[in-house]
Image 1 (cartoon, rainbow, N blue to C red):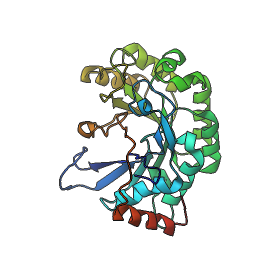
Image 2: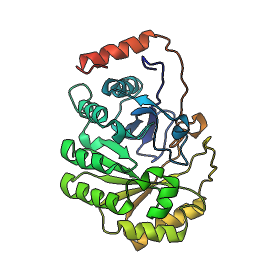
Image 3: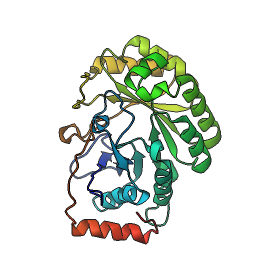
Length: 293
């Protein structure tokens, strides 16, 4: 909870490399945890399958408020990776996001830039800026559709940023940054999950040094109701991308559905701050970094 009385959510995802999946209890393998941070309260993008968009846009988080999420999470478990995939469009809060990300690689947190991923729905001018300002971090593109027509239907921002120009920006980022680019693709039953869609996506990305993350759809409170693709459809989709187009493809593990903390489910309400001592301590930590609210 921040001074404005608004709350943003961050989610810790714990993994156990020996089991290859979430481990809620003691971890026996090489433990790693990923923190999913929010950059805004609410979001302007209005993706049709995402609960955050139903809040409307409430405000940007400062660099300090973004870092507070990492400070708090680090007190719970060691954090190895940070992904800017929580509430909000990171590229619409560009300055604060880049300042926070650079601070995460500094003396207090010591994260590798390679372990930081900044997501965007496809704000092309900011992708170009990131390539110049912080090319060491990874980039994630919330694509969700293989054609301009379909993408414009489910991702309204796509109308302002044509798919052909977005892919060109991705090519430039890959050429000049040498960092990873992830393609995020939420699997929506009978919307974007058919074999035809898989071939369209494969043709779009063939030969590119990207990692495609297929994301099982998580139920949300959005008015337009979608359904998750079945496991057979998901497996078939992945198989086409891997075997026909030789594209590296993963299926994101489903975590946090029960607490509405999974991908696309984050949403909060306006509440009064309780002025807790814990929050005061977090703010002191941020002030020591030299980043003020």
